[in-house]
Image (tube, rainbow, N blue to C red):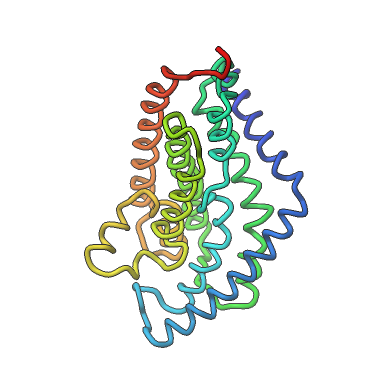
Length: 266
């Protein structure tokens, strides 16, 4: 119970920390709303030419756009979550302080990132999504059970997102700089998560591959659950399997990496 309270406090601290950046949050809301408008009209034109593309109608395509804008910062699709600070702490050697704490390193950073994600969802993501629902026809469910299942997918998506970024951050133990790995996170996040286009649209073998990669658990799976395009238990199993696998890989890489920690000056 004591450990649970500790990690809950870390999550609350992460929420409060990001809540203090009010100007940045307002700018983010504006940016996501504008990009949502651009993408919506692009999607509408595309779906006019190709009705039923990816198995979606126009309302579903519009829903997908606004959900993507809602989850862009929530899931740190292009990076910029806990991994950014962790990379810097590894680079400078300050991670040694983290290792001396009587806490689990991975759970500590996961808790903080969950707090960050919760604030980004409520403070930055919700407004563009509500804007889209007010001014465009969206395929939103009316059953409470669907919304509850969708909420579960968001939690699992946040864990998968963190696990991917945590693995990337640990690479700095060997690379000694996070700029390159940060660029890789940005490119893979945008392309493989379906941020630009739904993964259902990708053709042939490429489509089959991207839909089983962990990035699909971030936007594509929650979107399909929200719009009734997939069975919730199957979605949960897919996301949970990737979350467990990636967290386990992170735990293993962390064990290897921390054996070679060298702090500047001793």
